[in-house]
Length: 497
Image (tube, rainbow, N blue to C red; front, top):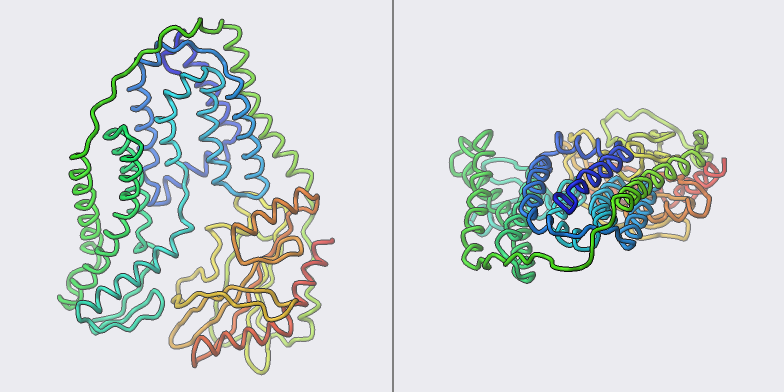
């Protein structure tokens, strides 16, 4: 690495890094876009500064390293290329982006050798925080925040009526939205906590314990923040705790929690380690061998990236015809009331229709995907079952399989102006069904490896009731008992086209 003997090895490694970033420039662009648009990852540029600083602190021992290419590093680099290929196959950007980060480390290992890899492992590990991940836990954080706030309000003697993430107190109605989930506090705390632990402790146990606290602390701080904001608004007749004071109070609580954590954590600081310069160990590799290793290291990620493009091109089939014969006998209608309208970007074919079933409207939504790629994949944080925010989420649960041709589904409950909506949904992937995002991705990999393509679809059935969510769910289940099996068989026929 930087300053290795001879010094030009640093430049060689940086050039290979550039090749990696250019080879996977589409995914690198997605990372940069996330830094600009996602508040939870606005610290992305700071990560680069931290990595540069930590590498600079290693310059003296790195100057003494005898650089020799490592076969283990090349093996690791190839495995990472395979991981990136699989990530592209199933359109999991995070998998490709993590592979890129580890490729940067593997490049050092392959070109400069084992000793350089050990010295740079810690600093380069912070590049993991540059990858935008963690948004899948946001709904869970929102649920926890709502429940914790309601519990604290009741313990304070404030009467509360709760319905999912929405609750009503005498002074007004509150809703836990995405900004209240605490994902920004959590991701920032983990990054800052890791940096603090790396600089403060040398014992692995201390670092692990502090990182555990860095995860727990922002959750508790966010719950306190939500409770304090609601109580301040309640006690001041909604004159305080809203608008800018809402944001300022939140960051004040989080900042105080970080300061106290660092102050207490510093009390158990480990002494700075003694830097031991490597001695002996033979001679550095000649220039020709280093350059040959660099060329080979650059060709590996480039080759895997090109292989990914060939795999995509080999499966470039046209759009299917989504002829839903199973629903042909049902009367279609235009509902007089607004319904829940899912939005799934990049689908090759989309069906969104309202049918009359037993005298009541039932919405059917199908988004069919083929030749999936980044920005047009079935499982994505950009896809929404209820994208408008007009309907308030109230409940989530599983709906058990009712028959062999009616598999299990997930229920999402919404409410708007006293009208309840029960949305049942599942994933269909190559003839099989699941309700799990992760399982659907694994099924997609297996389907492609078997040469069956990546055809997949999300199926959503929504029924409504002014009485209760249970009543709406029963209507959806009755509809599915008659027609869901036929819909899945229609999807099987579409895949064969």
